Image 1 (cartoon, rainbow, N blue to C red):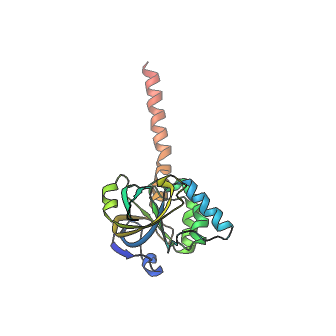
Image 2: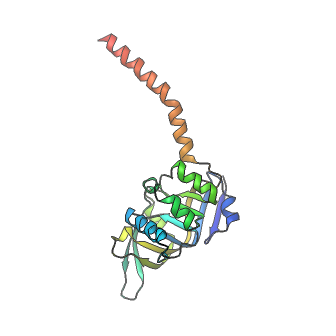
Image 3: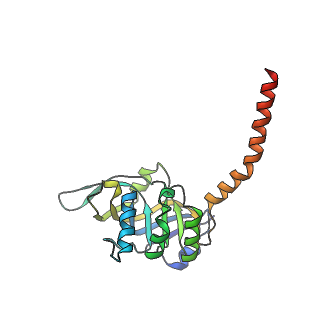
Length: 209
């Protein structure tokens, strides 16, 4: 396991060098959102050939957030907290390909079909600490822009400047190796033995009645 600092926008070489289990700290500008409405609108823009209101520059994180505008035009971050990425599986292949993303992240990983696209494009998935709002919020140094304000705050598309955002765990690397798939495979391989043990206990309990 390596501990790696990456400056955004990330280079292809830096992303390609990451391995499953590495710890990453991100610095630079990232684009975040946390809801299905934003993903659907992104797909609509891509399908219609329209530019997104914010350039992603290679990094997109599933990070719901509550931001309040200040009278001076700046923003105060009330909270950020990662959300489960798997519910966006249907949208992520096109988003990764069309926006040329090198780093995506959130909580809970992405499915096997998305991981295949990530292998083709040289993209990694970074797992954020669930419930780690204080740590993650401390790394946010500025909110640069907030778009799609017709959505609730945590569904909006926002660009943030971060410094040492992390530690973030490489859950899926650019070679397609996935912590999540490994855990799923292990669970499936153990399931027959577990079911057999439960059945034996059920039979024994019935006989003792």
